[in-house]
Every structure is written in structure tokens, then in C-alpha cells.
Length: 136
Ligand SMILES: Nc1c(NC[C@H](O)[C@H](O)[C@H](O)CO)[nH]c(=O)[nH]c1=O
Ligand SMILES: CC(=O)[C@@H](O)COP(=O)(O)O
Image (cartoon, rainbow, N blue to C red; front, side, top):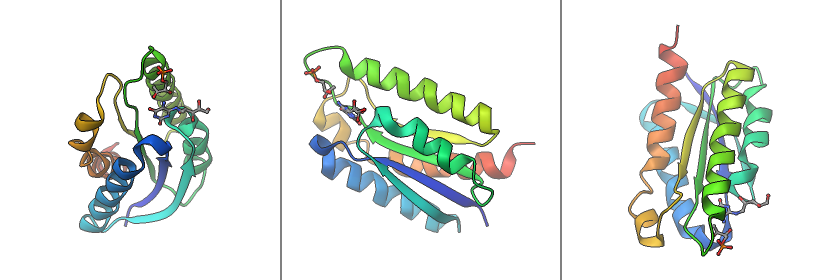
């Protein structure tokens, strides 16, 4: 059985979307008979790489799925957060030799577009399981 770590960025403005993404992630884990051994909540997507690193270094974690929602504001701050998070998570995966999947939606996204993408939580978990089982 694949053992997963889950990181959930709980940026308040999008609380409901994040909740639905987490439900989708947990359903995907159950559907694939995977076990979520630990869930770490962080304030926002920018804060996810360190949490992912803490999970990826554990012997009982085969892969980490990271969930977050970045909705467009008035400035380019959303792009800054998204780029930093994606790069940070890539670094964690390579440094720890552990799959880390990007289930952070956005940037450049409206709240309505976010609400239509909550299934990406499940996609991140499915990809994490595939990587954990299929990588040579
Ligand atoms: N604006 C969004 C954020 N901002 C918060 C940052 O991610 C971070 O928590 C803060 O800068 C402290 O380090 N986070 C999101 O996940 N989504 C946003 O739309
Ligand atoms: C991207 C956001 O929601 C927020 O952190 C920044 O908003 P703004 O670009 O309006 O300052």
C-alpha cells in the first residue's frame, strides 16, 4: 500500500475550495487503497515547500501531494507565490528523491474558475500514487 503525505495550504479567502480539494484528494487515496499517513496544514501555498520537505524526509512516506488555491488579486503577487511554490516543490522532490505532486491551482484564476477545479486535489493524489509505484 502506498503511504502518502498531504500538505494543504489553507489560505482563508478560498476556504471552501480548499476543503473540497482535500475531500477529492482523500477520496482518490481511498479509491486507490493508499494511506494518508500525515496531513500538514500551512497558511498559504507559498509555505508548502518546507512542509512537503518535512514529510518527504520521512521513511514512512512514499510520496507527497500538495494542495492549494491561488486566486488572482490586483497585483502580480499571485504569480510570485505560484512560481516560488512550484520551484520549491520541484526542489524538494529532487533533493529528497521522493515524488511531490503539484495540486496547487492558479495563478491567473478567478474564484469561479477555482470552484470548477476542486477535482485537481484528487488528480494530485492519483499522480503521487502513480509516481510512487511506477518510477524505476
Ligand atoms: N494570496 C494567496 C496566498 N498568500 C499567502 C502566501 O501563500 C503565504 O501564506 C504568506 O505570504 C506567508 O508566507 N496563498 C495562497 O495559497 N493563495 C493565495 O491566493
Ligand atoms: C494573490 C492574492 O490574493 C493576494 O495575496 C495579493 O493580492 P493583491 O495582488 O491584490 O495584493
